[in-house]
Length: 113
Length: 117
Picture 1: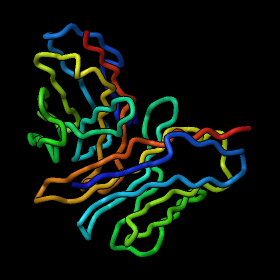
Picture 2: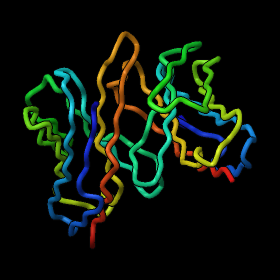
Picture 3: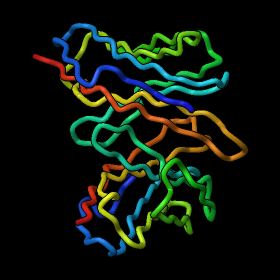
Picture 4: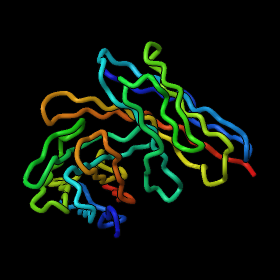
């Protein structure tokens, strides 16, 4: 039981490049989330999903897209990376409704030059 | 707008002693949920404790307990018998249901706790 895993762990991009972050969970959770964590700030919700095939915007969705084609996977895409997207990205999942415990992945440190 | 404030950026406590981390929030809602999450140096965040606003009884999980003061909009975390493994960043978080299928999460900026041997 791996829990929540994220790929890759580190990445450096140049401005304008694109990339996809992969989040996978093996707990059969319905809900999945993407957050970003910046120095001196709390986690901010980017997008989330309440089930396979569904996605919704969080607090800071601009510049990101997501997809949930399979229940166990939640992908976060950056179509044209900007230095402002330099951050640590965390994926999380929960069994059903949001107020259940969220299980977090180890994070992906992304630097955009 | 809802906000979550953690006024203590850093704290330290001696092993075996008790420490309290403060959290205040601002909302006009009556029904919401509050959480404390712990982020150890390994970075993987884990839930410490949660409180539902409609419950007056303070939540407790082993050495961790909260002091939930709804009228004052305060949600502090008390760690008793502190252990070296408690060293971590602690985040207070607020969650409320907005519309059908939509939820709003707000995290505080965190308190870095160091437990001293």
